Image 1 (spheres, helix red, strand yellow):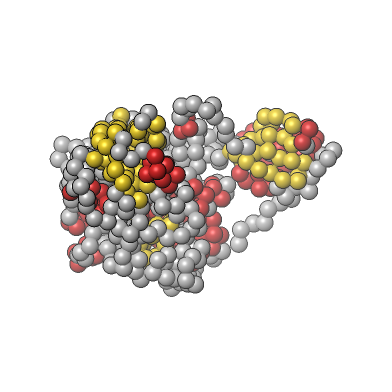
Image 2 (cartoon, one colour; image 1 turned 135 degrees about the vertical axis):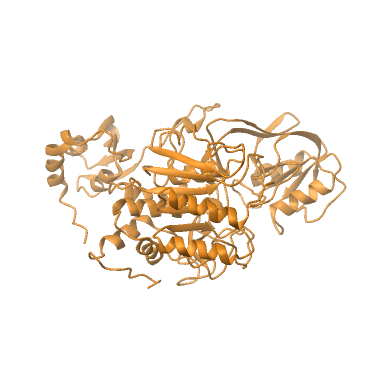
Length: 525
């Protein structure tokens, strides 16, 4: 059992005695918060903050509040202090201009959703763990990846190095696993991971022109094992089962490696591989409302769900994506896997774009719904359109994808519902200029969607758990994640969510309760 917390005053005394011996490099994240205190109790709360090693920024006596920076662990403990009324985040504010928000570190929503910060507060951030990612390479000079203690890899693509990534997919995945805690950009699930090893099996064309085979994946997985991988993370899939591939992943599981893979993005009930092998954890995608994504594959092999919609992470480029009509500039988002460039044409309304139209040299507005984003873009492309502009059918940002393995020859961008409806109502038959260009290489960030984005959340959680106890087995970690997942959808395991949303802190609690030598006690027993 985990030891119970000491009363706060006792903890303050202990901390005061040992604070001078703690290394400054101890990677516990600091939160900036505002603490409201009981009338007349400001000095006591102020002293508690200072005793915890916190920093006082402002004393807002008119509202009985102090603005401070403390670790998340201490923020939770201070919230229980009888002299404290409430604690809330001290949110950022920016000039209303072109300030880049990623000059300040952002915590993507999925990091909180999988309880990663609660495990960080316990002092576990992925140290001592090797995560091997099989993907499109990564930009090793990215400001949020270059300081990972060991960043290395191999490439199967002749003439291309593992540290290049023309597609951006592998860099995005790597950022979700282990973007470092450096006050800029984003932070990864296991931001203290000791080693990320990349095996590059997709080339630098910037689209999925080059396909990998099962044998390529097998070779890559064995390369991961040879380089000390605890976890193999695969944001990839294919429709056909391979006996040899299954044999390979079964053998790696027997060796103690945990393999995690994307369930796939067709939104149907077919098995995709390697996720659907019993020895691999199959991961579905959910959105911020904890609802399964409409593109997420569903079947009885889906084991866990994780954030896979609007996931902000690292990219090897910075993009400019806009639509300009009649002098009005609309901020847009590049549709994942679509072509980049510029295009101009008369703006027309394609409705849902469920079929083609007379769209030669036109920029075509397509409302989300009924068919996939890929099919909409293909209908525009096959009808001679120069660009597809997809807008949402609900009042929120749209981050669309053509889906793994797909690409387009024309530009495709996405807009929110309000902008799309405004264009339909007021801007039709005007000349529209579409821009979707990139600066390469560069330390960029974008929010993407897909089971590809969900997979590294689970891989990162597994790394956190392993860093808490290196003696744990892959079986114990897997079953802890399954046993403690937040049940979503139908009660119990179901085809859409598996056991539910992976929960790092609850899984850690579960594992801490195991007695020495005790095996798993979860649902896979």
